[in-house]
Length: 102
Image (cartoon, rainbow, N blue to C red):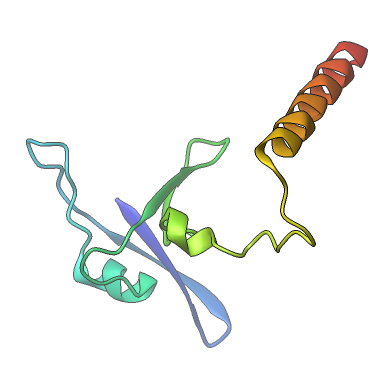
């Protein structure tokens, strides 16, 4: 079962569309769902489970590793491998210290 949420005249409309799980455990997303999410051939989808056990299908924010390029900004100067390693060790030590304080 899938719920489609869309605004119609400022009201939320829920629509349930049934799909069948294949013998391989695969589900075909119905055309209406693909259109609603703006999905095409070879696009990625994310299945999100919330704390109440509800499952949502959505388009992922970052569908692949290439799509996150530049999202964290850039460093003012390049770091050597040793500098990056030192920062990682310091961060790890800080995390351990904070965990022990709780």
